Amino acid sequence: MASFTRIRACDYLFHLNVFRSSFKKNGNLSILGFHSSAPKHVIELKMPSLSPTMTSGTIVNWHKKEGETVSPGDVLCEIQTDKAVMAFETEEEGVLAKIYVGDDSSDVQVGSLIALLAESGEDWKNVKSSETPKISSEATQKSEESKNVIAVSHQPEGNSKKSMIMGPAVRGLLQRYGLSPNNILASGPHGLLLKGDVLQHIQKENLKPVPISPVAKPIISSKTAVAEPKTAKPATVKVQNLTHEQEYQDLELSSMRRTIAKRLTASKTGIAHAYNTVSCKVDSVINLRQKFKNEGIKFSINDIVIKAVATALDLCPDVNVIWKGDQLIKPATVDISVAVATNSGLITPIVTDVLGRGVLEIGDVVRDLADRARIGKLQLHEFQGGSFTISNLGMYGISEFSAIINPPQCAILAVGGSRLELGDDGKPMTVMSATLSYDEEAISPVAAATFMSTLRSLLESPQSLLLGHRSLPA
Image (cartoon, rainbow, N blue to C red; front, side, top):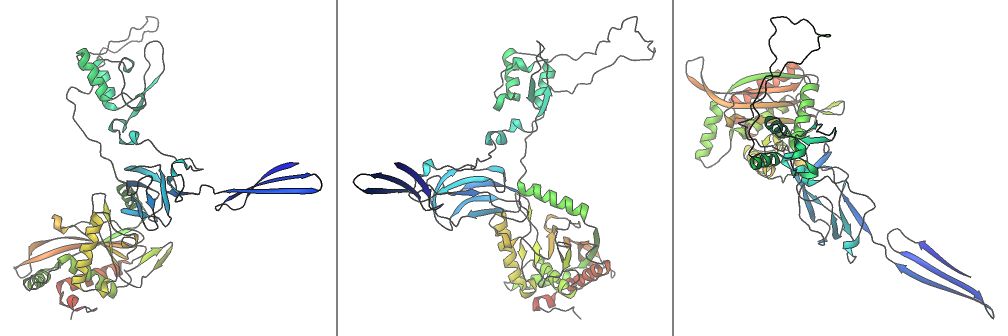
């Protein structure tokens, strides 16, 4: 009697094949044979969630190619989240066996399979995954002609009810030249009729636009005829003039811009925004900055503003609050988020513990964060958090504006540019406006007004800020 048994000894070490043959001849004899073979251990790499609000992202480019060795700490690819472009590192080692989602792939859902990693020494070309990746067609995503298309039901001759898909420009050309889409060869993906196909057909056949004529009145039987008023005018059809079409270009929105729009819409509609605006005389700040500049010490007015805001928040702690779920809390430190414009959208890197830093150090930190934000090299902790935000558009010539609160924070300061005005003594003075947008549920109007008054006093007498004093000037 012979039997063959396959025993799985371990999920990831080896399989054990056992062959047992037993027979009886001049006694009992049993033979037991073993054979082991290592299984192919495959690591599935899935789209990570690189920020708390990330639901999908864009794979910008892969740093590793199929067949290359991967070690712990290596950067596999760069992923654009809803906040920034971040590096995706792995703690595994092996060989990158398969890339399912290539470069410039957008709207990749978090948790979806993007690549496979095989063990070193394995035949990486033949590894497979138990999960079927859901990959959208890149050709469909990148095709400009397939964007903003609408389905138009067209019934050609022969009573055919085939549905055609075409863009508005294509449909307009068909109507203008009296063409049927069934008579034109479509070259787009999945049989999509493109604008170039129609133009090529028009040029090839040397067609002219169909002249526009009034619509003929329908013939009505005398049995069902209805008396028509003599004042009625013949019906006319207004057709859009398509002889001079305007060129346009479709612009793709980044996932960051889409997320910013959703979050700010939710903030504006869901948070009770209230506003306070003050005008500060900043001649002292300008003169102080010029004095230090002459001595070789450079800092910007924005650096002074950041320091002044942090000091005012320290003196008015009821404004330095954030939401944690449904609970309002006061952070132990003053961490200022500074709005920075990038090509992908607005991002707010954080200057931590501003009270413990001098103006020069604040300027160095802001410049470093801004430079790395523009090239997408910020780490998650460098733009997630903060207790207060400053948005400064003064360098763009904006004199005054209001900003939208960035939750879970409860306030944001919009800083405009400086301008000359006549003072009460008839002499010119330099004035800068600042507008506080605050959550009226979290911050009382009195606390907001006290904060803005304190901020104005600090900016009009900035000497104490350079000395690190945490009190109002006398």
